[in-house]
Structures are given as structure tokens and as C-alpha cells.
Length: 131
Image 1 (spheres, rainbow, N blue to C red):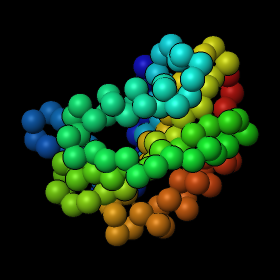
Image 2 (image 1 turned 90 degrees about the vertical axis):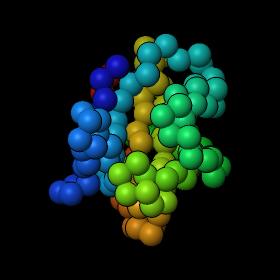
Image 3 (image 1 turned 135 degrees about the horizontal axis):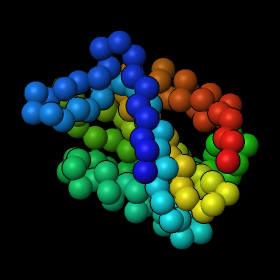
Image 4 (image 1 turned 90 degrees about the horizontal axis):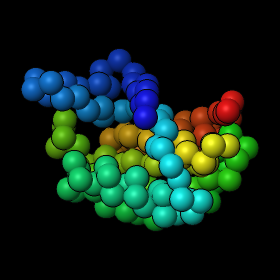
């Protein structure tokens, strides 16, 4: 699926080997073929992220509206590839009409995560999903 990344100035990092990661920002994407169980599909998505992020840890999840739809937001902690610092990650998921999973991944340094989480929450609640 297509993945878009929105990162502020200085929030995007190239590792020099062709890989990129971001230290601050929001990623939006679609995962194909949901099962109809949002918790299971969210867990599968996070397991996919965990393959390349061995330090990823879950810090719980909550039901939350995404653009007016029933969604799930899962909070994770990680160690950034770019900075080696602790970062906070919020993974939000909901279904599209075709059964695919729309996901938003908000990433910020741990010491700035409260400010970023407030902004990410506003985006999740106010986003317009047109499918």
C-alpha cells in the first residue's frame, strides 16, 4: 500500500545507506485485507513494524474516533534509529469501506510526546476520510 509521511523541518533523517526514518511526524497508510477484527489487524500491523524495530514496546491502547469512525489507538515506546533516544509512537487504525485498514502513525521524541500527542489527537478526530 501507499504510505505518506508528513514531517516538520529537521524531522526526517537519512541513514546514508538509502534508508530513512523520521524522528517527528505523522505517517498515513493503508494495509490491504483486514480481517474484520480491528484489534487483531492492529496487532498484525504493529508486529510488522516490530520486525525492523526490536525495541518497540506496547504501552496500551484505547478506542478512539478517527474521522468520525470507530478506531483504535495503540501507544508504543521505541528507541529511535536516528537519535538512539526514547520516542513515543501512537498507531491509530480504522476500517475503510472496502475492508482495508487505514493507519496513522505519529512519532515524536519521548520528551516532546505530550505536545505532539495533543496535535496527533486533533488530526485523528478531525480528519476527513473519503472512500
